[in-house]
Length: 331
Ligand SMILES: Cc1ncc(C[n+]2csc(CCOP(=O)(O)OP(=O)(O)O)c2C)c(N)n1
Ligand SMILES: [Mg+2]
Image (cartoon, rainbow, N blue to C red):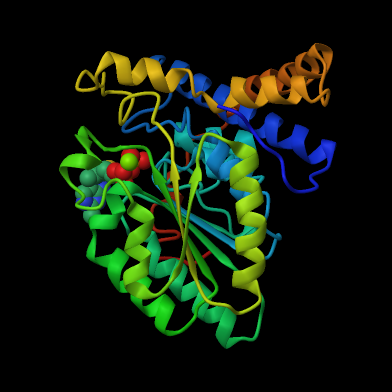
């Protein structure tokens, strides 16, 4: 449970890590409310419980680096600084959404932030991340591609193909596995031969590999500071496994009855947000008033995001053939 800080991270940066984790938690709560109201339809996968990973990792990147992720993508998008109103509007299917209302929850995208999606196909983002890293290397740039995936992606052929090519070509890509112990209703213990040590899969490709406590934002952040530096300097790709827990069902429609009560209870005690908050207090880095102020700002931002989404128009019929293959390309 303890958090140990080893590197020099400023107080302002630590508080920003806290603010973003709180923002993601509150944003996801609002998504659930809006889903119940019928404003968000289809699948909705929330990131509740896993906030320390996206926040701790993404805040080590430069603006020019790439971020790619899977369909549980709201947290990564918020951590990358995509506009919260435009993310919510996307979930509502509105024209003001980050993907113009055509992508929905699983396909958030914003090239201005080098946030290259949001992929519903398990493992689909891995070859794309390798391709972006190849482009960076080919063009002599020092951009790194950070590619998140769930533990379920490790069983995909695309995982092995991407890992192999990235290692052969020493691509500047970081493969970051969010091991939340389940893929839909299946425990990874039932589906993955090396479920206790997923990071060791990277050894087969001669790739640097690490394991970190995914509910400790400081540990994730510190590890990533080193890994990003190595990968950027041309030492080749890296693989990270962060152990965490999906606090809710696979999607909002999943009551997750297949999980033992004791397991859920245990992981509740590992919630990354109260854990970090208690640590910040114990270090004298934030007072109750500081937290109240941050929390109030976050609540306001989320309410404003929902209001913006609700007031926005749906895309008109003229949008039907725009932004699709064979249609009108708008960039
Ligand atoms: C190629 C492919 N196969 C199957 C699915 C159906 N599917 C959607 S989510 C999912 C589980 C993925 O689990 P994991 O990667 O651990 O992500 P998590 O939901 O735990 O974050 C599956 C099998 C899919 N979307 N794509
Ligand atoms: Mg999983």
